[in-house]
Amino acid sequence: MSDLAWMGIAEAAALIRERRLSPVEYVEALYRRSDALDGDVHAYIHPTRELALRQAGEAAAEIAGGGYRGALHGIPYGLKDIIDCAGVPTTAHSRILAGNVAATDAAVTERLSAAGGVLMGKMATHEFALGGPSFDLPWPPPRNPWSLDHFTGGSSSGSAAAVAAGFLPAALGTDTGGSVRGPASLCGIVGMKPTYGRVSRRGVFPLAFSLDTVGPLTRSVEDNALLLSAIAGHDPGDPASSREPAPDLAADLRAGVRGLRIGLIRHFYADDMEAHPEVAGAVEEAAGVLARLGARVEPLELERLGLYAACSRTLITSEAYAVHERWLRERPGDYGASLRQRLLPGAFVRAVDYVHAVRLRRELVEQFESAMGAFDVAVTVSSMDPPPPIEDADEVARTYPRQARQPFNVLGVPALALPVGFTRSGLPLSMQIAGRAFDEATVYRAAHAYEQEAGWAARRPPIG
Image (tube, rainbow, N blue to C red; front, top):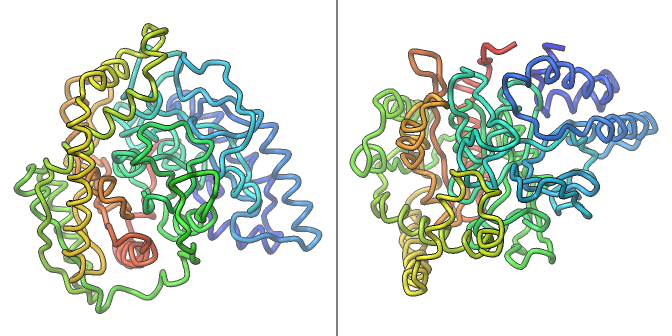
């Protein structure tokens, strides 16, 4: 069971294809682990055991008959509980949607089902992907497998905790202002926010229409590329869905970084905000590793981090309030206090402020595209601080906005968080690698080269 718990997609896929590992055996082993440990982690909000065992059995039978579909066939995964699966509850971790059962699959669920994936369950989240680690809801917030006293980050908190704890090899989250990369950073795994429009959001409860993305969380870069390849592609059911072709994003993973031009956005964490010394030191060391592997690493200057944050905050606050306005009027007491406090300011954002934010966003995109003419990818910090104690509300509130993920949501470009070490007390540290729009492949290439050289992906949390 221990070996299966830490097996990734690529390794398990080879064994499943060769019929040396049964998908049913795999699923049962992972459920035994989560049954034993999730009472402390709280990653699951709704396991789908019956569905998973049926899908695993169907996958085993199809593979035995020579019908192998590819790398996701028979692979267990989880869905953040704002992503629909027909016949399964979608609660968004909120009383508002308690008892809500999805009538149809989300587009990403359809794609993973077509690839032969096995849905293990719906994963806990911040309430409606925004509320923060709330203790006044029917379900407790997930805890960090590296230290159960610490915060997972948000909002795809259950998805990240489950992958980090060895409950799942992969899960999907959503990222509007950093909600895949944040928990990936604090839980010591890999999380990708794809280019806006790369992955359909049909069947995903919205937070902010102009920024929402769906992205994968895994323990390795290769697994992440495999999962994103499976869910990417045009969907006419999502008006923001791009027609850009979706390539095999794992094809060039092993090309290395020799000759790549990498821009180090140091001012985000040295001038605009001052990162914790262990975080800043780890990012600088990681940039040095990339340089030693043959990349050309040079400073990259963008607009101030605070300008991106203000633009993001205006867009999210306005759009999230529009989504929730009716429930806020009719059922305000059914929200957790954290989310209610985050939503209500949207009632007071002026239309002119929203318009200015939209215009500013276009200017920031143009500036980034111009600056990236000299670079293949950009590197910077993800979270400015290590994971804070989860029950220290003041410290969580202090560190929550101290991050550099929002710029890449505003810009709409791909950005990946991956581990770059650990604090002296054993908590994960992370950085981001961002790229040009629709160039996830080069982001993965740089990340894989670093990951293979640094070796952090082999380290396991002390849980279990």
